Image: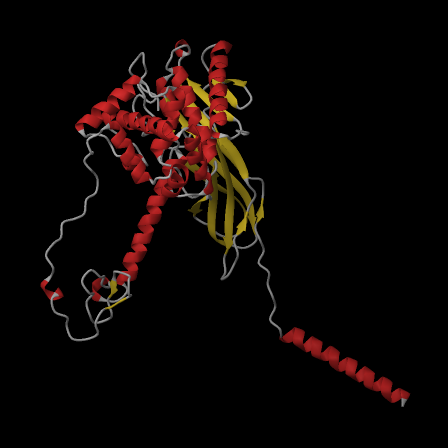
Length: 474
């Protein structure tokens, strides 16, 4: 019995081994795709020309897609640039040049990070990302002098140390005063670049900069640019432009959230109020426009300001007038509460109702009433006049009728029948046109949002008359 038992055990073990071998032979082989081997990437920026990036890589198998992921400053995500994939396998160096002339201007002092992403050939292949390479796009045309305070770092290339020290003092005082007002603390450095030459200054700010601009703040890279020659450092105008632009940076810290930025008139109005107050020139401009009915309603000053000189100056004068009225009527604490509430992601009306007890429209009307202003004429897009209805809308043809979602206010055409009045029809008379129009509308909305993000990522510009020369600061 013992020998029989051992024999059975051996037989069963042999059978199990055969089954395992059989299953191994029958199962398809699993091939793991070989990932590319990345070398050390490089990135080299030259002011006015562009940014050159390279990535050595060894390919064990062909790739179907090559992409560069480029992130600048505090952008929400990378810009993805697809490039031609190299043929074959082996060692190769991938190259790409970001041309600041053709691909878009980059402000000096902008951090840039890139990495490469490769997708091997084959269905379902996962993309593989290489290591990061980073640099700061700098204006390397000059030998910059630098002096640092607690927050502000001043960079200049003409003038002595006294020049830099006065600019630093103005900057540190502006930061401290606005921090105290808004109850925030700046803990990241602010770079302040001072240009002595107008042509070089405009080259730094890039094409599209308005004429006579004297300063620009960009919160995304926490950088202030100003056009101040050494002979101007003692001018009264300098004591306005430097604090004005730095107020914008502290304002951004106080309201920062990923959903919504406050109306521009509130941002600019505070900067003007903090840097120079509601001065007589601005007051006279607003009062004259109030009498002749040419004021711009505050709802027209929530985004970009007018491009004409008169409209631009009026927009700034109105902004500080509205802030002055807000403080006189509701108090400085209410102003601070209003500004700080934007950090919680509130809409304009939510922020105004919570802080002031009125929505934005009511506040604008009260401001106009306080000025005794003639109600300004509304401009901009107007509703189109009603046109004649097509004759075929009067009678419905035989066949399936259009169906509408209750309460939607729009109809979707069914195959074989036109849309109901006010509805949409499929492209070429077929179904699906309503969906197409919706997708087009969504795409247009995203494009506008992108334009707003991009315009916001370029910084805030302001033109103000210089008391001495009639030029301006942005």
